[in-house]
Image 1 (cartoon, rainbow, N blue to C red):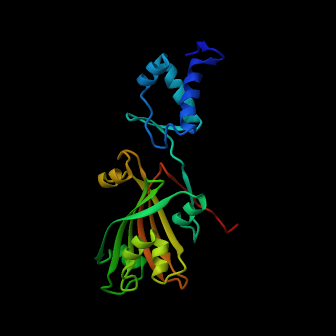
Image 2: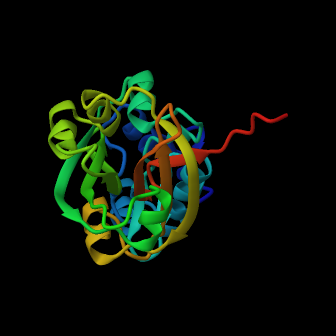
Image 3: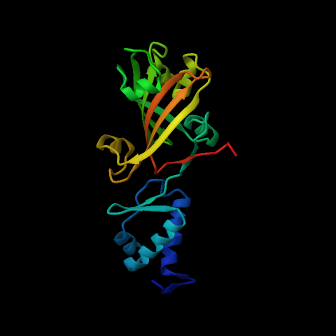
Length: 242
Protein backbone atom coordinates (compact mmCIF):
# COMPACT_ATOMS: atom_id res chain seq x y z
CA UNK A 1 0.00 0.00 0.00
CA UNK A 2 2.90 2.32 0.79
CA UNK A 3 5.09 1.29 -2.14
CA UNK A 4 5.62 4.29 -4.37
CA UNK A 5 4.97 4.45 -8.09
CA UNK A 6 6.68 7.60 -9.32
CA UNK A 7 5.97 10.36 -6.78
CA UNK A 8 2.74 8.82 -5.44
CA UNK A 9 1.96 6.03 -3.01
CA UNK A 10 -0.07 3.32 -4.72
CA UNK A 11 -3.24 4.19 -2.78
CA UNK A 12 -2.84 7.79 -3.93
CA UNK A 13 -2.62 6.64 -7.55
CA UNK A 14 -5.94 4.79 -7.17
CA UNK A 15 -7.47 7.78 -5.38
CA UNK A 16 -6.36 10.31 -8.02
CA UNK A 17 -7.61 8.13 -10.89
CA UNK A 18 -11.07 7.51 -9.41
CA UNK A 19 -11.43 11.16 -8.38
CA UNK A 20 -10.57 12.20 -11.94
CA UNK A 21 -13.27 9.88 -13.30
CA UNK A 22 -15.81 11.49 -10.94
CA UNK A 23 -14.85 15.10 -11.63
CA UNK A 24 -14.74 14.58 -15.39
CA UNK A 25 -18.15 12.85 -15.21
CA UNK A 26 -17.02 9.48 -16.44
CA UNK A 27 -18.72 8.32 -13.23
CA UNK A 28 -22.08 9.91 -12.45
CA UNK A 29 -23.82 10.78 -9.14
CA UNK A 30 -25.37 7.65 -7.65
CA UNK A 31 -23.36 5.32 -9.90
CA UNK A 32 -21.85 2.26 -8.24
CA UNK A 33 -18.06 2.00 -8.34
CA UNK A 34 -16.26 -1.17 -9.34
CA UNK A 35 -15.72 -3.58 -6.45
CA UNK A 36 -12.53 -3.54 -4.38
CA UNK A 37 -11.46 -6.72 -6.13
CA UNK A 38 -12.10 -5.25 -9.59
CA UNK A 39 -10.21 -2.06 -8.73
CA UNK A 40 -7.32 -4.09 -7.30
CA UNK A 41 -7.04 -5.96 -10.60
CA UNK A 42 -7.34 -2.76 -12.63
CA UNK A 43 -4.49 -1.04 -10.77
CA UNK A 44 -2.53 -4.23 -10.02
CA UNK A 45 -2.51 -3.53 -6.28
CA UNK A 46 -3.64 -5.24 -3.07
CA UNK A 47 -7.27 -4.82 -1.91
CA UNK A 48 -6.02 -3.02 1.22
CA UNK A 49 -4.53 -0.39 -1.07
CA UNK A 50 -7.90 0.08 -2.76
CA UNK A 51 -9.66 0.20 0.61
CA UNK A 52 -7.37 3.03 1.77
CA UNK A 53 -8.05 4.99 -1.43
CA UNK A 54 -11.83 4.59 -1.00
CA UNK A 55 -11.60 5.75 2.61
CA UNK A 56 -9.90 8.95 1.48
CA UNK A 57 -12.46 9.52 -1.28
CA UNK A 58 -15.25 9.13 1.28
CA UNK A 59 -13.53 11.58 3.64
CA UNK A 60 -13.39 14.07 0.76
CA UNK A 61 -17.15 13.66 0.25
CA UNK A 62 -16.83 12.23 -3.25
CA UNK A 63 -18.25 8.78 -2.57
CA UNK A 64 -20.46 7.02 -0.02
CA UNK A 65 -20.29 3.41 1.11
CA UNK A 66 -23.29 1.18 1.85
CA UNK A 67 -22.52 -1.93 3.88
CA UNK A 68 -22.97 -5.03 1.76
CA UNK A 69 -23.74 -3.05 -1.40
CA UNK A 70 -20.49 -1.28 -2.28
CA UNK A 71 -19.32 2.28 -2.91
CA UNK A 72 -21.26 4.89 -4.89
CA UNK A 73 -20.51 8.34 -6.29
CA UNK A 74 -22.05 10.79 -3.82
CA UNK A 75 -25.09 12.60 -5.15
CA UNK A 76 -25.25 16.38 -5.47
CA UNK A 77 -27.20 17.37 -2.37
CA UNK A 78 -29.99 19.92 -2.66
CA UNK A 79 -30.05 22.29 0.31
CA UNK A 80 -33.74 22.88 1.11
CA UNK A 81 -34.30 25.81 3.51
CA UNK A 82 -37.46 25.30 5.56
CA UNK A 83 -38.80 28.82 5.24
CA UNK A 84 -42.41 29.95 5.26
CA UNK A 85 -42.47 30.54 1.51
CA UNK A 86 -39.63 28.35 0.23
CA UNK A 87 -40.66 25.41 -1.93
CA UNK A 88 -38.52 22.82 -3.68
CA UNK A 89 -39.53 23.87 -7.25
CA UNK A 90 -38.48 27.48 -6.52
CA UNK A 91 -35.15 26.31 -5.06
CA UNK A 92 -34.46 24.12 -8.11
CA UNK A 93 -35.11 27.01 -10.48
CA UNK A 94 -32.61 29.12 -8.53
CA UNK A 95 -30.03 26.34 -8.76
CA UNK A 96 -30.73 25.79 -12.46
CA UNK A 97 -31.39 22.11 -11.85
CA UNK A 98 -34.07 20.21 -13.71
CA UNK A 99 -36.97 19.14 -11.51
CA UNK A 100 -40.44 17.81 -12.20
CA UNK A 101 -43.32 16.13 -10.40
CA UNK A 102 -44.95 13.03 -11.83
CA UNK A 103 -48.44 12.10 -10.67
CA UNK A 104 -48.60 8.48 -9.56
CA UNK A 105 -52.35 8.52 -8.98
CA UNK A 106 -55.21 10.61 -7.59
CA UNK A 107 -58.59 9.99 -5.96
CA UNK A 108 -61.32 11.64 -3.92
CA UNK A 109 -61.33 10.36 -0.32
CA UNK A 110 -62.71 11.02 3.12
CA UNK A 111 -59.92 12.50 5.25
CA UNK A 112 -58.41 10.86 8.31
CA UNK A 113 -58.80 12.63 11.65
CA UNK A 114 -55.32 14.09 11.26
CA UNK A 115 -56.04 15.55 7.83
CA UNK A 116 -59.51 16.70 8.93
CA UNK A 117 -57.99 18.70 11.79
CA UNK A 118 -55.04 20.09 9.80
CA UNK A 119 -57.26 21.37 6.99
CA UNK A 120 -60.02 22.57 9.37
CA UNK A 121 -62.62 20.80 7.30
CA UNK A 122 -66.38 20.75 7.66
CA UNK A 123 -68.16 17.54 8.62
CA UNK A 124 -68.36 15.06 5.70
CA UNK A 125 -66.11 17.26 3.53
CA UNK A 126 -64.00 15.31 1.05
CA UNK A 127 -60.43 15.91 -0.10
CA UNK A 128 -58.56 15.22 -3.30
CA UNK A 129 -55.52 13.01 -2.72
CA UNK A 130 -52.69 13.29 -5.23
CA UNK A 131 -49.69 10.95 -5.00
CA UNK A 132 -46.56 12.30 -6.68
CA UNK A 133 -42.95 11.45 -7.36
CA UNK A 134 -40.48 14.35 -7.54
CA UNK A 135 -37.42 13.92 -9.76
CA UNK A 136 -34.34 16.14 -9.84
CA UNK A 137 -31.99 15.73 -12.80
CA UNK A 138 -34.08 12.58 -13.55
CA UNK A 139 -33.25 11.12 -10.10
CA UNK A 140 -36.18 10.25 -7.78
CA UNK A 141 -35.83 12.36 -4.63
CA UNK A 142 -39.23 12.60 -2.96
CA UNK A 143 -42.63 10.87 -2.76
CA UNK A 144 -45.64 12.94 -1.71
CA UNK A 145 -49.22 12.24 -0.73
CA UNK A 146 -50.94 15.62 -0.95
CA UNK A 147 -54.49 16.33 0.27
CA UNK A 148 -56.49 19.31 -1.05
CA UNK A 149 -59.91 20.37 0.31
CA UNK A 150 -62.87 20.04 -2.04
CA UNK A 151 -64.69 21.59 -3.79
CA UNK A 152 -62.18 24.49 -3.77
CA UNK A 153 -59.43 22.50 -5.48
CA UNK A 154 -61.46 20.42 -7.88
CA UNK A 155 -59.14 19.67 -10.84
CA UNK A 156 -55.91 20.15 -8.87
CA UNK A 157 -54.41 16.91 -10.22
CA UNK A 158 -54.95 18.11 -13.79
CA UNK A 159 -53.46 21.51 -12.94
CA UNK A 160 -50.35 19.91 -11.40
CA UNK A 161 -49.92 17.67 -14.44
CA UNK A 162 -50.21 20.65 -16.82
CA UNK A 163 -47.90 23.00 -14.92
CA UNK A 164 -45.39 20.46 -13.58
CA UNK A 165 -45.52 21.45 -9.89
CA UNK A 166 -47.87 21.87 -6.94
CA UNK A 167 -47.22 25.63 -6.46
CA UNK A 168 -47.91 26.34 -10.13
CA UNK A 169 -50.96 24.07 -10.06
CA UNK A 170 -52.37 25.99 -7.09
CA UNK A 171 -51.71 29.29 -8.86
CA UNK A 172 -53.56 28.03 -11.95
CA UNK A 173 -56.59 27.47 -9.71
CA UNK A 174 -56.35 31.00 -8.27
CA UNK A 175 -54.22 30.59 -5.12
CA UNK A 176 -51.23 32.94 -5.38
CA UNK A 177 -49.88 32.92 -1.81
CA UNK A 178 -48.54 29.61 -0.51
CA UNK A 179 -47.31 29.74 3.10
CA UNK A 180 -45.88 26.94 5.21
CA UNK A 181 -47.87 26.89 8.46
CA UNK A 182 -46.35 23.84 10.14
CA UNK A 183 -43.86 21.05 9.41
CA UNK A 184 -43.28 17.90 11.45
CA UNK A 185 -40.08 15.97 10.66
CA UNK A 186 -39.22 12.36 11.55
CA UNK A 187 -37.31 9.48 9.97
CA UNK A 188 -38.08 5.84 9.28
CA UNK A 189 -37.16 3.07 6.88
CA UNK A 190 -39.15 3.23 3.63
CA UNK A 191 -41.84 0.79 2.62
CA UNK A 192 -40.97 -1.66 -0.13
CA UNK A 193 -42.89 0.42 -2.68
CA UNK A 194 -41.26 3.70 -1.61
CA UNK A 195 -37.79 2.12 -1.66
CA UNK A 196 -38.36 0.91 -5.22
CA UNK A 197 -39.61 4.33 -6.36
CA UNK A 198 -36.66 6.10 -4.72
CA UNK A 199 -34.23 3.44 -5.99
CA UNK A 200 -32.69 2.86 -2.58
CA UNK A 201 -32.41 -0.07 -0.15
CA UNK A 202 -35.06 -0.42 2.55
CA UNK A 203 -32.27 -0.33 5.13
CA UNK A 204 -31.55 3.32 4.28
CA UNK A 205 -33.87 5.70 6.20
CA UNK A 206 -35.92 8.44 4.57
CA UNK A 207 -36.86 11.85 5.92
CA UNK A 208 -40.59 12.05 6.64
CA UNK A 209 -42.38 15.40 6.65
CA UNK A 210 -45.94 16.36 7.39
CA UNK A 211 -46.66 19.85 6.07
CA UNK A 212 -49.66 22.07 6.53
CA UNK A 213 -49.84 24.87 3.95
CA UNK A 214 -52.11 27.92 4.13
CA UNK A 215 -53.01 30.75 1.76
CA UNK A 216 -52.69 34.50 2.34
CA UNK A 217 -55.89 34.50 4.40
CA UNK A 218 -54.45 31.78 6.71
CA UNK A 219 -56.88 29.23 5.28
CA UNK A 220 -55.43 25.68 5.03
CA UNK A 221 -55.11 24.63 1.40
CA UNK A 222 -52.86 21.56 1.55
CA UNK A 223 -51.75 18.82 3.93
CA UNK A 224 -48.91 16.68 2.64
CA UNK A 225 -47.12 13.54 3.80
CA UNK A 226 -43.65 13.46 2.23
CA UNK A 227 -40.88 10.87 2.14
CA UNK A 228 -37.53 12.36 1.09
CA UNK A 229 -34.38 10.53 0.06
CA UNK A 230 -31.54 11.67 2.31
CA UNK A 231 -29.17 10.84 -0.56
CA UNK A 232 -30.31 13.92 -2.44
CA UNK A 233 -31.81 16.44 0.00
CA UNK A 234 -30.66 18.10 3.19
CA UNK A 235 -33.13 20.22 5.16
CA UNK A 236 -32.01 23.57 6.56
CA UNK A 237 -34.12 25.02 9.36
CA UNK A 238 -33.60 28.77 9.62
CA UNK A 239 -34.39 30.75 12.76
CA UNK A 240 -35.51 34.31 12.10
CA UNK A 241 -36.56 35.27 15.62
CA UNK A 242 -33.10 36.44 16.78
